[in-house]
Length: 101
Image (cartoon, rainbow, N blue to C red; front, side, top):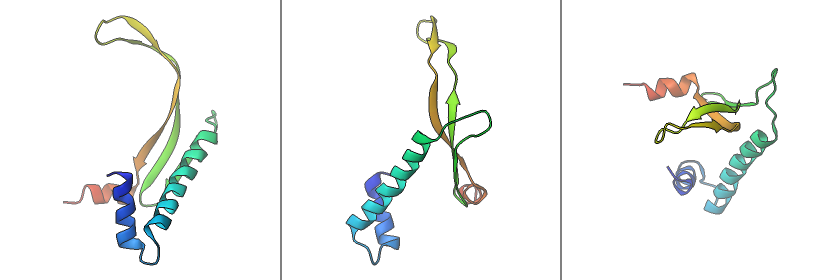
């Protein structure tokens, strides 16, 4: 699904009183706020930044340390630099809907 698909779907199903431009601004605003939260939030030993949407799932900021690895083509050892990413775990309602038969 693309951003345009998401906006079209939201506009058709929930945007009866809103223009497509307004729906676009709302969707953009939600994702911008999520992104800003994870960029600003710090991962510490005692706290892991999370954004939970009940019924859908949880986004969690993860920090990976620098580590050794191998180039799969040449077999040469290399150092993989430290990085930060966001993971997603589906909530119980989402899991139930995904596995519904």
